[in-house]
Length: 263
Image (cartoon, rainbow, N blue to C red; front, side):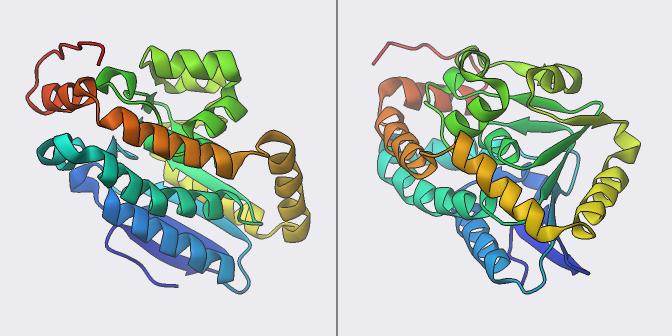
């Protein structure tokens, strides 16, 4: 396995440590990240002796989600761009969530949009006490992607997940834990060490039993994963072509309140 521009990969006695490695940009989700994530997920499926994965992020924040600064100059032609980017990202997410080993995620600072969907599909989510998890899709005039409708529903239930997205909520670590989005909350200073210790505990455990348990739960809770991810991608492509979506991106980048027209 090898690192990419946006994801650093380290192997440690059966444990793969993946670090989102663009902290200066807020570890964004964009086209290159989608390609990188797909490649890393594929490599993990083929990695001999893999027994657990730790997903973490460099810098003060886990991920700001979609890179709106990249969207801004292309906002009048987003639909094909969204279809292209989600094709890579969604395939990577499917492969990553289906890994037959436990996946632990450590979340610090802000996790937004697609970054929240990504971590919500992992097996154990550990957050620092000051972490904030949010959904800004609706504020931008966007529908959601990155498996949000699957992973958020799986963790929070339909009504709570829908409210989280429609109201563009921002949850602190305790609120996210109460909603089921986060499993464990620890002091910020302990986050990385505690997450690594838990991942190593899984790596020393009964790997086959863990993998089969994951498979059964996924079969019970997300049987339509592939179809739902494709529906999300195509829906977001349609929505991104609307005037409201273009206005949402422009308003965010130009630091003003959006004026939506309903079209």
